[in-house]
Image (tube, rainbow, N blue to C red; front, side, top):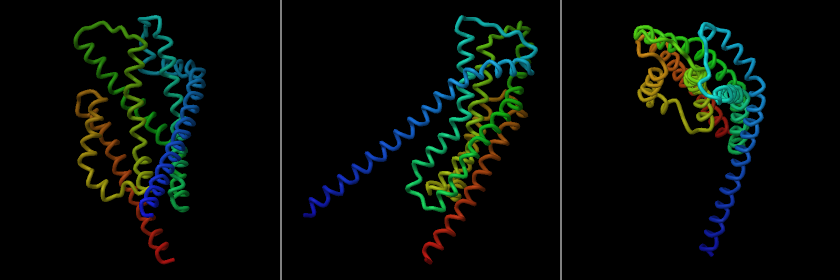
Length: 256
C-alpha cells in the first residue's frame, strides 16, 4: 500500500509538471505571436522612424552609405525589432503574471498586475535616456578620435544604426530592473535583505555595463553608471514596499 501511494503521488507530480510545462509553452507561443505581429507592424513603421532619426542630430549632418545590397533590408529589420519590443514587453509581462497567478494570493495577484503598464513606461524611459544621453556621448567620442587620427569620415548606414541599437537596446532593457525585482519579490523569490547583500556585486555589474557602452572617459561613465545604480537602489526600495505589504498580509492571514 505505501508503495502504491508513493507511485500515485509521483504520477500526480509528473502530471502537474507536464501541465505547468504545457501552460508555459502556451504563454510563450502567445508572446511569439505578438512579437511577430509587432515585427510586421514595425516594418510599416520603420520608414517614418528612419526618416525621423536621420533628420535629427547626429545623423542629420552625415552622409550615410550602403556598402551592400542587403544594408537597406537589414536596417528595416532592425527598426522592426525595436518597434516590436514596445508592445511585446508589456504583453510578455502579462503572460508571465498569468502563468504565476494561480500560485499567488488574491492580494498578490492585484499587486503584481499593476506592474504591467510599468513595463512599457520603464522601457520607453530607458529608450529616451539611451538615445538622447548615452548615444550622443558615445558617437561624439568616436568622431573625436577619428578627427585626431586625421581620418576621412565615411559612415555606412548599417554601421551607424548597429552602433546606435547596440547601445539603446541593452540600456532600455536594463531599465526594466525595478519591475523584475518587484515581481520576483512579489512571488517571494527575492527580498530586500538579499538585495542588500547583492549590492556590491550589482554595483560592479552595472558599472561594468556602463563603461562597456560608453566612451572611455570618466564623465561619460559617471553619466551612465549613476542612473543605473539609482535604478538598482529604486529596485531595493520598491522591493521593500512590496515585502512589507507581504509581511502585513501574512500577519492578518495568521490572525484570521
